[in-house]
Image (cartoon, rainbow, N blue to C red; front, side):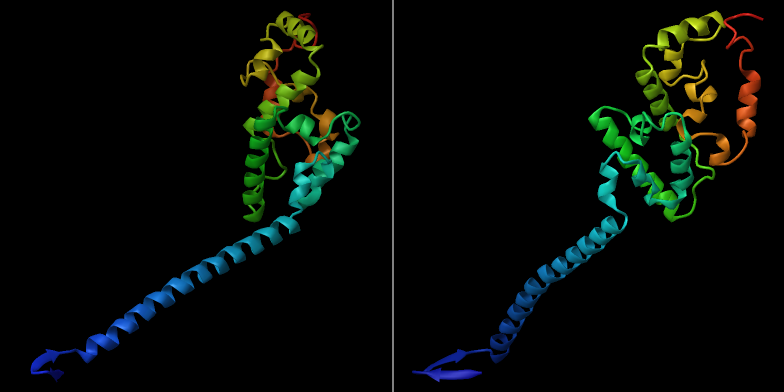
Length: 219
């Protein structure tokens, strides 16, 4: 558009005057909606997470109450077996199945919780439930810790039988059968309560066990 002002022609653009406000409005609208969308997404995540944590009784897993394990119904037979075991009056789940130091304990708790949740949710867990290699090491370490006064006697007995001392097995090696190899019932009662007779692997282990292990070296 041409505008005459005191003999001087000035060109103005009506298009530029209308487009500029529109672009600024779009930017302003986008700047308003992304925080709202982010707040909605975070709120939904917090709501679902909070509901899941409450529904799963998440706070109970910070306690030492064995009943917390029964929050997952698949652990009912383990809980029932523990009530029949000889250690029922002196040890709870965390005494045997978790390290005693603070950091290792909660690292083990986190790993167990993630693995158990993933396995049970996808229905890909083993039945009867078996303690994994890391859990067996923790279990053995706790046996040795609790029965420390007996360990030197056991070491001497094992050496008479030609086997390695029990403290070697506690370090994760397999030269010596673990305590639970012979004393499997102390924690959860008879095996019948946890899935029946010995597995083939356990029978093979018994067959390879030194015949003199419990006879002090006598034939």
